[in-house]
Amino acid sequence: MSPPRPRPSQQESLPSRSRRPTPRLAPSSNNVRINTQDDQDVIIDGRALTTADDSGAFGSTEAIGDGALSGLSFLVTKPEPGWTTVATAAFTAAGRILVGGKIQITMPDVVTNHGVQRGFLFTTPVVDFTPATPTADAAWDDFNRRLTVTVTGTEDVPAGAVSFLITNCNTPSATVPADTASFYTTDATDTHTDGSALTPAGETTGATDAMVPQALTGTLTLDSGTDTPGVTSTGTVAFTTNGQILVGGKIKIVLPDLDEASALGAGQEASYGWRSESAFGIPVAQALPSPRRPASPAQACTISARAR
Image (cartoon, rainbow, N blue to C red; front, side, top):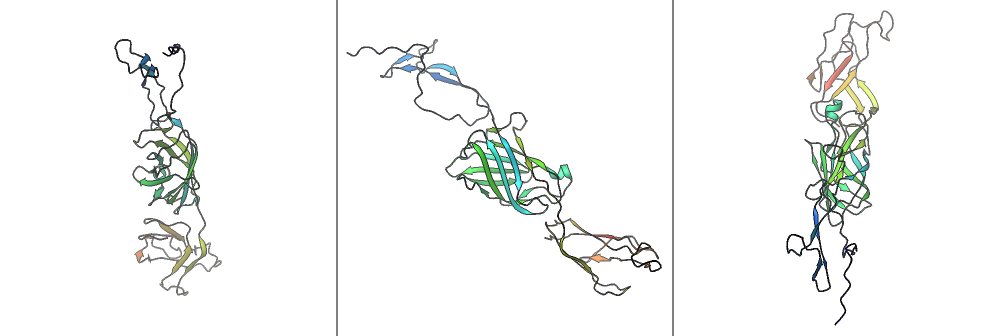
């Protein structure tokens, strides 16, 4: 008969047979059961004191809290109003994002904060982690201004620096200053993983671009059609825009002032200046001119169909 094996002391720590990653879950703590056995699977230590239960004594586990996101940014290739462009989202994740997990990005409310017609918008966005290998799908929630990126395929997004491209990002309709987008991540059950426990929604913010105005290009002209005084004719305005002008947007044209300060010279002032009756076939509202005083030179028309 083999001699009995020495019994481990109560302070001895036995190595674990396997190494398991920490769960990607919201902050919580729980209990683990621990016992020791000989090589015949007979209990040595770990029986609950109050019962004959040999499944193990209870021990506490640590709470798994939020991981911190850092180095966040959301930048577009063309930081100008009215463009469909490519955006790059970047951050550093505390832990990996498993397949089925999500990256949630909430864009700034520039409509409320800065009074523009339309804010950031995504139309059929496509995500590219190149040169990394994870794959993902993206969906846009316009009401909540939220872009949801869901990890697909077979590879997790590793912990550390994360960066990916998003196509079909529509920039705000007009100029806005730099702002912030909010980020957080979840597992496949939508349980919060990385972000910040310091904010109510568990989000961390990253910078967005300012949308800066651009010059109109091309040859800017107003061709009056018939170049004879006192004639009503069709004029043609021509220029090249940078970004699109949304439905409801305006093109404002300031006509020359032919009053006393006219370049025609002293004694050559026109009784009436330039006047517009319609634009795109729509009557233009203006104050009626009086002799020796032209109409206000500022004219504007409102776009009633999409113009690019």
